[in-house]
Length: 274
Image: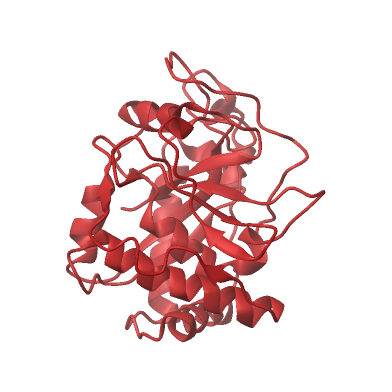
C-alpha cells in the first residue's frame, strides 16, 4: 500500500491543502487551543502491500473480538485502494496520507448502545495487547460504559454508527493528524473538512486492536495517547483518552476541562470513509 503518492505533486504544498507535508491538519482560524506537535513522538507506517498483509489484519481482528466480519482480504485491499485514490485525487486532503494511515474494518453493531459496543471493543483491545506482548492489563471501566456514552454534535460520528448498524464498514484511520489539538479544537475543525472525514471515537479502539504493533509502541518514555473526541461519557464535557498506563490498566481520562487542554503527544484521530 503506497501512502506517499501525494508527495510527488508539488501543487499539493500550496495554500489549498488542509494538511501539511507531514500529514498534520493545518490549524486555521480556531478558537480552541492547539499546541505544537511533539516531534520526538512518532508512529511508523506498517507495510500493507499484498492480500496476505490484509488477511493477517482481518484474522487478528476476528480472533481478538471473537467475530467474523465476512470481509475478505481481496475486498479489504480493493476498498482501501479505492479510498486512498479518492484522497489522492483531492488536492485539499492528499497530504493527509503523508502521515500514518491504517485501513480498518468497523464491525457491524450488535446493539444500539454505544457504551456496550465500546466495552466489547475494549475486551478486544486487551486481547490484542496480551497476544502481541505476552502480558495483559486490566480494563478499568468494565461494566461502566453501558448507557453512558454519547456522540458529540458536529463530529459526524453518528454517520459512521448509522452505517455500522447495516454491516461492516471499511475506512482509512489516521491516528495523529490532529496531534497537539485539544479535543475542542479537533471538534471545531470538522466543519472545514470534506464530509468523508469522521472524527474518531469507537473506530480508534478497532484500530488499536488491528494495529497493536503501531499504536501500542512506546518511544522515549512517550506513550501513544489517542483522544476519542467524537464521544462524551457521563456528560458532553468529558474527554475519553485511550492509553496504556504505567500500572498496566486501560482507562479513560474523565475531567470536565480535559477537552480544552492540548498536549504535544496527544492526538484526536480521523476516519475517512467513502
